[in-house]
Length: 111
Image 1: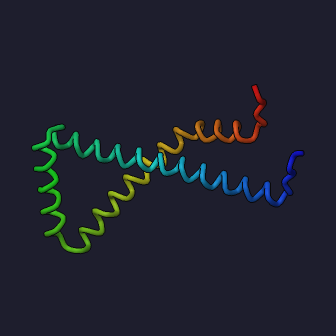
Image 2: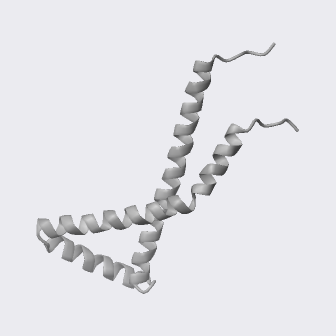
């Protein structure tokens, strides 16, 4: 005997599925964008541990000695760069989300 689900339960479970799926997709894109920005910072440091820490120290000293307005401007530049990289990654990975949507909508056939 099969249990039938009401349309309300189906809509609710579909909503939760898509919320989790979209959230995971966006989280993966955000991690990739953060990784690309960190990779850019590593490349600016000549891809060496010594250069990485030297550049990090230099950046932190300049950031901490800067006035509040300059700090806010730098933070805005970093956020805009992150948003642009995130948007490009989302656009390039849109097909993965469409594929997940197509496989979730189409009924699976038992093999």
